[in-house]
Image: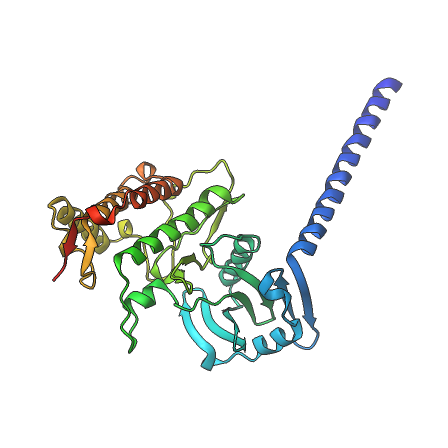
Length: 329
């Protein structure tokens, strides 16, 4: 009896010691992460707000007090865009330093969940095709996310925006944007732990940097998944007013029409008329890859890692002198 009690006591002590060690290790790891990624955390006693800045070469030289004051002075004159999950402002610190600030008004649980999802998804990601999150602010009435400012705006604005300046994307630029976006999404799906499923990919959420490289943005609807989960999802998500083609009748008709036209070798009817000269073989290969992504059965669609490989292979096979060109008059 005494021996059994001793064994039970020994097991209990071991369990308690194991739990305490886990807690201590977690605290130490968190402090290490905070030293590595956090350069400033400021509380504003008057407004009840807090600003957190993540370590980066760009943020290291900035004064937190100046950033806080200018962030709090943003007005409608600084608005550069808006979406289903917030208004975006341009924050100019000086002639050479600017940020994009997304404002999410508090008041609904869904908006707060969107803010938390973006922080959870973006806080530790560093990838050339994922928009960089530099910090965030919380206040009693709204939350702010501080991002890298993209000089060329979104792909949607670049293609369809009503501006005095006419901007045309040639085929190589569009191809590189598609490949960059695919690389960013593949990184989220396969290399992040937990995996991140964006759930709202569309042209307005693909931003363009100074080199016209794609940057995936807006993670307000993102879902974080364990490494054992599949990339396939049949849940309807996305910004209000936007759905994937398979979820509405007009989209299904559009996809069906495009497939039929391409199968009939009449690709010029579905290409942007501003593309005056484009490589036929490469365009047909991209159509083929796109149709694989539009398989009616989600489980038959390729993973993003496979999409990236196919796009890279198509690009590597490009031989400019041997191209047959499609000319759109």
